[in-house]
Image (cartoon, rainbow, N blue to C red; front, side, top):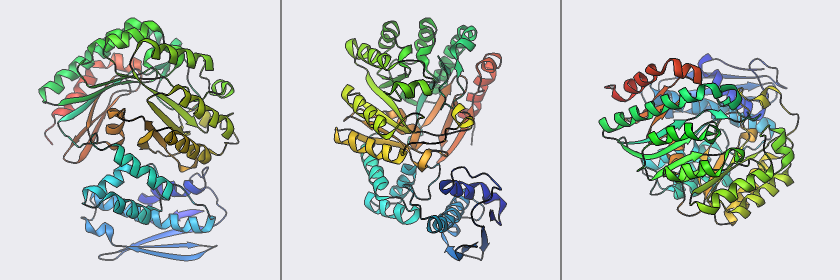
Length: 472
């Protein structure tokens, strides 16, 4: 059993418990008893951790007191201290060595940039991250490569904005997916109305951006799979988007959604980047996750997109899928590299509560850490550079998602999104806008479902006004 004397810290400390015991739930019995007692004096916080196996461990820190007590910064550093103390004890008790140490659901590059903004160099920042969070040398190398690859692209600019357009529709629902996305056969009757209103919202937001004298860095159309909807519906939406953005991305992830007609449309609308996402080149794996297409469909779609168009192409892969093995995952890496897309994104399977796979978990996963390491080694050997990393709770093995690119093909949208350095104005059902001002991030979410979006459309426009025109 685990307990902590400050209830407000329980959720955060339980994240550390789950790093070592992935199926742990609140109140669940462990193989040992552990209690964490947090106390304070005027300038120091103290953690005493008692367990029936390892006796008593005591930790001190004064870092939180560099900030006003009760402030956001104070709370952040207090949570870090308490989590790190518990992590050190559990590491000793279990003998487990975790690749990202005590980090849970954190963008590690943001931590690096915090240190760099404080005036130290990248090597010093890496050393501090290792000291403070016990991050492995392998992952520190990944971080330093990413920071280097983001030079000249990463920026904090309150006058810049990215336009995100959400089309939450797919042909079928993959078993690992936790997004709010509708299957095409269940929402097709709504799509004419949705595409008309979405085009209106885009135009409204472009006027808002103009009034605020903001500059658009990128346009990104995601989902779902935007190319799942009809060509005329997609054209209505894309026609509303600005055509002068240096980067214009459309996720065409499902290869069975890609046709020459739709690729012609994307080219005519000045789209510069698309995704064609295999997830795996193993047909047994594709069938097990409910993708509904074949390996041949992947090759056909890729060949079609390469033949007459000059899109930058990204291909998504997932490590840890059911029915996959280390050997078949390595084969997927080889087949992807043979196609030579400009970008490759390697995701670690994340079992969120909204996914079918979470509700019906499989008993065994292949060695996902070994898969991720192999992907890094092989992809970088072929001349690709890691340029962004993203981590979230419930990833298998406490690992990460990594985007790799050929030289000068970094995706601005991905960098800005992962680093939360530029505001986002987001259109469509389930889209979340972010306003970055004065170092703070404020969010405004549209309603999640297409039906609600249609019936409450005017409310969505008001939410944009409230977020971007508020005084504070």
